[in-house]
Each structure stands twice: as structure tokens, then as C-alpha cells.
Image 1: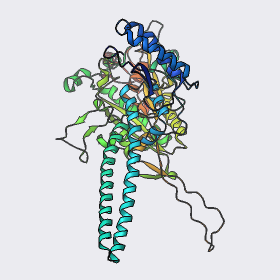
Image 2: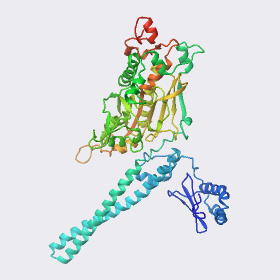
Image 3: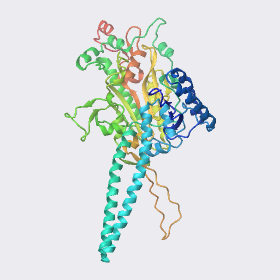
Length: 572
């Protein structure tokens, strides 16, 4: 970038280097206090070499000065070769970002932000947090030093007054007062800086697990497993070679249960209404998922509020980043404990926040919750996408799984929760794929995430039906949810007096939170309607759902049902 014709020239690269032409030489610095590297300098040098000829007619003087500077820079550069700009550094023992870890490990934090394809504003926020935390530490030292002076001076005042040294006592009082004023000023400044740090941290996403593959979008996700096959599903329904599977909305219409146009007339676009056997099939899926998770997988069912406050959404990190995707309730109508109120985008929010601010015992972990709720999303960023059918609605039913666990059990519990979601698809005999999300597709709060993608023959592709995320301690840090590790068992040696030592009480640690859909009911309904349709328009009820459908095995289309004397959308 050439600014003001001749100087300065500033070249910013994603790796964070800045090269600036100042006073006839190039001044180079790493904007976020990283060590200089030969590789980074050469990238910037190559960039300048490539682009300077284009601007040479306008700034010949600059060109003559810059090229020698580049040569001097390359000849004197250090020879250490850290990872390239695109490489993500291992997070090692780091957990979720906080002010201290960002300041002390800025290189790691920035590499993860670049891997996530974070924008420049987010990158700058990380640098801002590092700078503010450094200032915060200095202020704390200044405040504590002033408080110590005040304490010492106050003690001197009492001693001098007892000795009737009035003048010296007055000086000590003045010293104490001055130190107190300095401590108060530092405290006020600390409060301001802490507010700035908290605001900046709220926009910094979680660090990535080392297993997360590098990639820009969902096309670069990593396939882990595939279960079942579209061909087997088609054969099970007896589809002929020339049969073209219908979309779920056409299938539901044939069953007499598609009322979407009426729903749009009531509520607007991206709302749906189902009736008759299709509505019952949706309810059957919800009941089946709940029973599977509570009876066989050991989750506790919870009925949760559908309205939550701003603080709860900040705890699970939907806010502040995703506020435009939420349905906000007018403050004149309702607030949550004085906070802005919102409809829940997922039951993850109230379920995870059930233990906000609490200290749990390690012996009580994991806490496993399941809830079936409607979810509400404005889908502000989805304009023009998935406008047909049930796939992307403002209101949709979902069964949500949440686990609160310890750091040591975190990965195992994540695998367990994902397997529980997979079991739903296996019981329904729906072909699916399990993929690990890449760095550019993973969610804001997740450090490691699996998506389950179910086969939809009407659309001819696999689509997401569940996303199972391990957030590490990212959400727990925001919510203040901790656990106390099991006490260390005292040895058998008695202490003095013949009594055994009491177990040492361990310091509380941040919990880890895991969540996933088990499953998204609307999308599961789409999969059932499309995979279990027959060529005559009927839909076979999956065996796992027949007990919830009154024993119904096949839902007949409206015309066939009427012809058979069974009425609209009846079953066999």
C-alpha cells in the first residue's frame, strides 16, 4: 500500500509483520511482539518486490531507497525458521484464552486465529488484550505498593500520636492520605481496563485442539466414519432404478400433513406447520430420542426456560458475536433480572447455565442433561440459503445433550456424547457420515467438533443433523462454573497426637462443557420422510418409531387413504 505518494509504505501480511518506509530506510516490527524471523521477512520482501514496479512511475525515489534496504535486511536477518504463516502452533497445555495466556502466548493465540480465518479486527483485539493486561499488571503493582505505604503510614500515625509527636504524626497522615488517593486512582483505572479486557476477550474464540484439520470451509472437513449407504437404503424401500426420490415437502404434502403456506400467512417466511401423521411422526422422533438418552444413555431430562438473559448467552458465548441471529424480546415487555431477554437459540444455553457460578464436586461429574425444546434463530446470515422445506427455519424442535465434566475426562465424554447422537441415526437406520470440522468451519466456542451428516436422497447429499462440540473450559470460564478435585487421600501415618491427617482440600478448577444435538428433530424428520418414502407416495415408519405411532407401520398418501376408506393420511 502506498500512501501519500512517497511515504510511508506499509505492508501488512496475515503473519502480522509490518514494514514501514521511514526516512530512507525500512523499519520492521512484529505488531504483536513476536520474534523476527527470516521467513516472515522474506515473505514481506517478496511482496514488496512484486508490487513496487507497479507504483515505480509514481514513486521512483521510494523504489530506489526500498530495494537497498531489502537487501540489507535479508543479509542481516536471523536464520531461525519458525512455522509458516499458515501453520497453527500447538496449544500445548493452554486451555481457553484469558488475558494472561494471551499476553504470555501471543504467538500461539494469533496462529489459532489465523487458522480460524479470523478477521483483522479480531487479530487486533488479541494484541489489544495483551497490551491491556500488561498495563493491568503494572497498575496492580502500583495499587498494592500504595496500599502498603498507606498501611505503614497509618501504623506510624498511631505510634507518633501516642508519643505526642504531633508534627510527625501530621506528616504521616498526609503520607497515608496521599497513598490512599493513589491506590483509589489505580483501582478506578483498573476497573476501566478490566472492562476493556472483558469486552475484547468476548470477541476472541476458543483455541483449537491439535486434531482439528486445517481448512477454510466445510469442503475441507475430515471424514472420520461412514455408516450405511444410500444404495442400501434405496434397496430397503424397493426403489426402481428410474425412481427419483422426492423432497420431504412433497412427501409430506402427499400425506396431507404439510401446512407451511398457512404458517407463512400467520408468522412470515421460515416458519412451518405440520398436521396429522406428519406432526405425529415429528413428536415420535422427539419422544424416541428422549427415551433413548434417558433410559439407555443415562442423561437426566430437564424442562428449561425458553427465555434467557444476556448473561446466560454471554456465558455460552452466543453473545456478543451472534446477537443478530437471536430473537430479542422488547425490554418494555420482559427482562431477565434486569437484563435484556432473548428466546433461546438452543437448549444448550439454559442447560449449561444451570450451574453457572457454582463449584461442583468431581465425584458428581459428569453432569449429563438432555432437553427437548423449540429453538429460535433469526438466521440473519442465511438469506437465500435453504429456503425450501424444513431445513432452515426461525423456529425448530431439537433434542439437546449437554455434559459438564472434568478436564481429565473431557475428551472421553466428548466421544461418548457423539456416539450417543450417532446411535439415534443407527436405530433409525439412516445412512450418515461423521466428520471432524476443520479450522475454518468450527464454531466460535468449540475447540474440537464432530458433525453428523445424514443422507437426504431428495436433495442428493449429506446434510448436518447434529454438531457435537467440546468447548473445553471456554464456556465454564465465562460462566464461573468450577469443580473441586477429589481430595488427596491422606497416608496411613498418624500425625502428632495419634490422629490421622485430614485430606487436603483441593483448589477448584474450571469445568469442561460438551454439547451436541441428539438430534435436530426437524432435520431427522426430513431424513425419515425422504429415506423411507415409497414409490407410491406412502412412507414406511421406521421400526424404532412404531411404538410411538400406535403401531402404525406405513403412512398412506391422502389419495390412497381415501380410496381405502381410511381418510386423510391414515396408516396401516
